[in-house]
Image 1 (cartoon, rainbow, N blue to C red):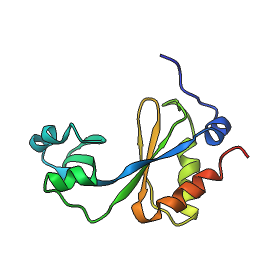
Image 2 (cartoon, rainbow, N blue to C red):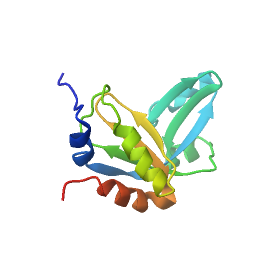
Image 3 (spheres, rainbow, N blue to C red):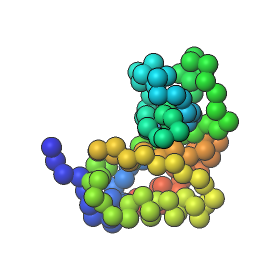
Length: 133
């Protein structure tokens, strides 16, 4: 499998963010509840207090689960290395300067950002400031 990109300047210029269509929620469930949610889950994270599940809002509602906050998912389509230094820090700093909260998740190939649903267009505009002209 090809190695991901580690050059920070290249990563920031070539991140090509794509907004996911569905709104998402972060919920927590008991470990025995998590397998029933696997098929619809974007991510599951095991923690001492329970299992955090990132679900499309529609799937959460079907399962009778609620959340106070709705998030927009944004995938950075550049193949970033898990060893890349400063990539999410640079993005986080710029989003923070715009007053945007951020919940990042890293996959093997891509980084995924979750920002408040009602501010998703602002977040995409901030991310666009990194791109090549």
